[in-house]
Length: 187
Image (cartoon, rainbow, N blue to C red; front, side, top):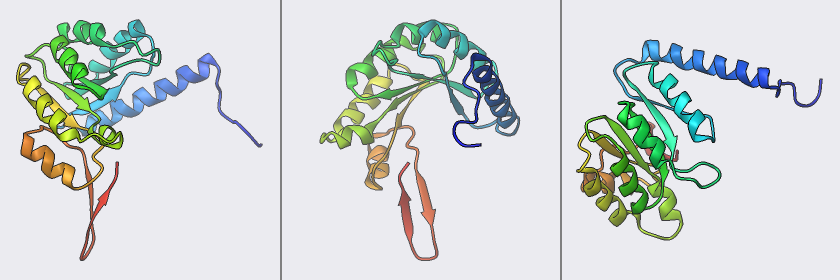
């Protein structure tokens, strides 16, 4: 058979989501002591809220990943406040500006662990040095002591040293070690 062989009907999409949720629940039986961020699927904030509450119930180490905007460019600040008030651990992602950082931090519960994920590497692609912005973001997060800043999409090895220098909490990276070389793998 040639072509699309998966079911795009509503029932097909629901079956795929159920398999995916079963997959993540299975992973959570093995990963209990490390944080795991799982993203909502919806573009509608009310549905995002329902999904977030469901996902958050899967484990103590689960952080619900919420994008800073939906596809209509509507910001998620109200949703973040609703979920934070319900003690949901969040990973608010795809931030690109300090205004977004300020608004997200203002929406978080300072006592609930959360991540604020700033796409510093993508900011660098626009021709701006992300280091001053990330240093200010570290300062902004001090008002939410349970929250941590993630330097997302590092583009070079130097980013790891810069993140460490300014006190950024998390920088995801993949290093590939060989016999004589250290290779930097872009993520």
